[in-house]
Length: 113
Image 1 (cartoon, rainbow, N blue to C red):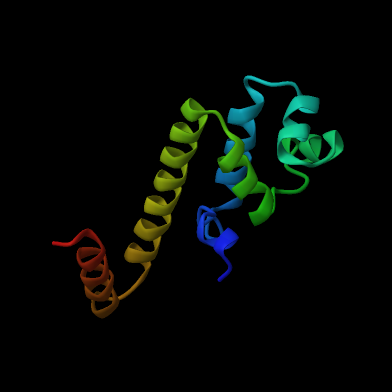
Image 2 (spheres, rainbow, N blue to C red):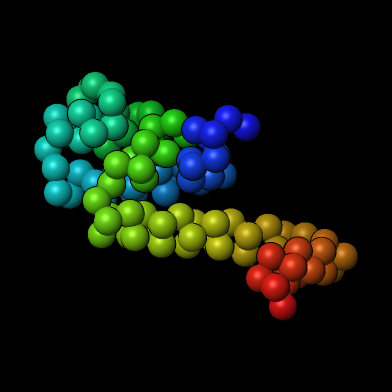
């Protein structure tokens, strides 16, 4: 991992739905052209995100988080936490007891309890 990668927010597992919500959040205080400039994409790309024709890549999502204003970054991180928690909940409810125990143990280890 290069030193540039170490500072990137881990976004690979963020759902398409959450990616769209990040774009919508950032677009609520900017024009499409301004957001395109912030993200380093074309206004057409932003329009495609808004219309849900395509979704922001990992690189674009990481750029959005990095370049968001402080109040936006806080909301984006909360949105991503909710997205991940929902995914873990769906996984937990879909597996057998053996794997539920594994999930609980791994989460306990992550949380230090």
